[in-house]
Length: 275
Image 1 (spheres, helix red, strand yellow):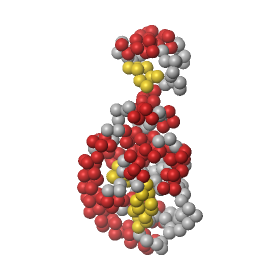
Image 2 (cartoon, one colour):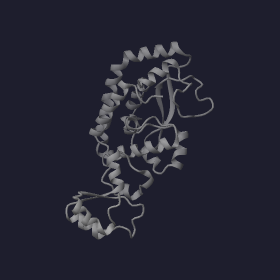
Image 3 (cartoon, rainbow, N blue to C red):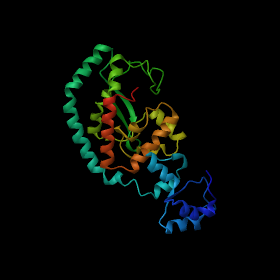
C-alpha cells in the first residue's frame, strides 16, 4: 500500500508510530529526501540502508547491488586477522581429535569401498584454496574411477556416477572425513567456503562479481553456505552461495564457527542435502 510520498515520511512515522525506515532505492543521487530522513533520525527513528538490512535479515551479501566501497568502508571483515591464530589452533586440535575418533570408521569405510567397486580408497582432486593457491583435496572415493573422463562436471541429483557405497557415505557426509588431513596440512579449515575446482573458478570469476574474494580465507569442510543453501550445480547456485560466503568472511568469529558446526551436525544426522 502506498501511504504517502517522500515529503510525508516524517509525519507518517509520527502518525503510524513507525520506528524504522528502510531506504532501498535503485538510484539515490538527487532522490533521497535528506531533510525528512534527518528529522526521523533526530526523533530516534532508525534509518537503515536497504542492502545492509537485507544482509542482516537473510544472512548473505547482495553481490548484485554491492559497490566495492561498501566492503572497503565496512565495519566487518575484522575476524580474518583477529581470529586467524586462534582458528588455526582450533583446527589442528579438532582435526587430530577427529582422526583419532573416526579411525575405526576409516577402516570400515575403506574396506567397503574396496569390496564395492574397483579403484583406490581415496580420491584426490585439485581445488583452489586461500589466495588462489592450488592443493589436492582428499576424500573417500564415492564415484566410479572414470567419473570425469569427459571433463569436470557438477554433481546432480541421483548422479549415476556414484557407487553403491558412495551414495551412503555421501548422504552421511562420511566421504569428507579425510579432509581433516588437509586441515592439519594447513590447506583447509574446519569452517570456511567450500573449495572449488580451478576449471569452475576460472569461469565463475569472469561471470560473477567478487567471486575471487571468497579465497580471502581458507576453504572449509563445512561452511555458512553449506548449512543455508542446498548443493549448487549451476552458475546461479554459485552466485547465491557466494553471497553466504562473503557474509561469513565479513562476520568471521568463534561464535559464528560454533554455530555452523552445530548446524552441520544436525544436517549430518538428518542426512539432508547430499548428492
